[in-house]
Image (cartoon, rainbow, N blue to C red; front, side, top):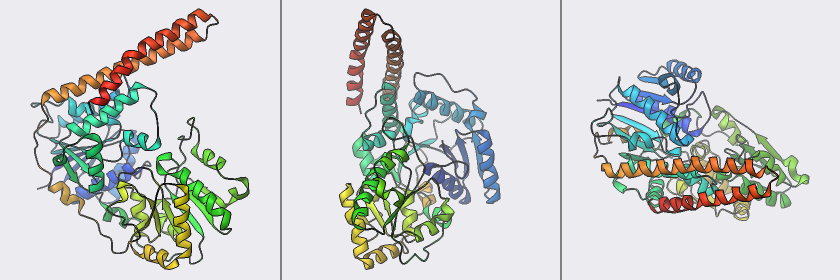
Length: 467
């Protein structure tokens, strides 16, 4: 017997970009085709939701109903931080749907802690009391910030980190795409192992859209980077490795395919930042392409000598699996997301995270054509577990955490949010006072700020100890 499932999302393919949207759209289709009734609650414009509805009709899928969050609850609730406001907004929309539909399972994404309010405020007798609430790992912002070396300057970010952590601890189920990611999150966030379900994306459906291996260009000397231009994706180490290679391989060329971001130092264009790392004499050997449709990935991969996915952190990385399926020799970073599915020297070469080790891996493939050929063929026999079977096997009810834990989580996040709002107010006051030519007023503002930050530092230290 099928279940009634709600998938919560910020992204939804094919109407907007984003790896989470590709996964969720495919997941909704796979679950619906297996006889489940699927509701998609998306925080995107109603016009984009209507495009998605048309896409579902054109594919002949029954059993999917899509909702725009703002059409259900037009106004975002007021809160101390944007993260708390979004979490409250999703809760309001979900409960409005639950008044009409009895959900068996609700699945949130874990990043930004959007499920926090739904989980922390759930009671034993409300509309979702008998609903399994799952949180799927896509890549928490806390993990990404850590991988990028980001040092948050505001308490609002700390509040969001705690929302992510608490949401995973309060969830009935934490869905991990592979075992190595479950192990990583269990260790970092202190999660109970019995709460995990290993459930990859519906890969066979996703890979069917791009096709299988194709004939590769025999004489290609083009090295491909495929992913967002973002620090966590390793684009800087890729460019630095290419500069090393270009010094002694005159024929090699480099393509970076992925959307630009404002993730460079100072919040500026990453593409411009990368170009500044490339000496003038070899800049014409680099090609930047903002987007290639997934349907064209086969031809893109066929024109490349090899592809590099040098990410610092991933939860699964659909791009690497796609490149494996279309037969492109892969070089990957040695991170947990690639540990299970990509054995070193069998389905890829792995480098140690530095530009020098990455350049050495590319050079090894140039020197060993047989290894490159073996890696290109290695994806042909790869198969993936049945995603729908993992959902069918999920328990239909679980015991919720004690009320005291949820209450503590709420109090902690509310306190952090309130202090974040106060700190921002004090900082704005300081900016105004420091603009005055009166030196005494400037001194008074600095003292005010330091006095306010002392209890804030203590609160942050306490919250870190509560993970």
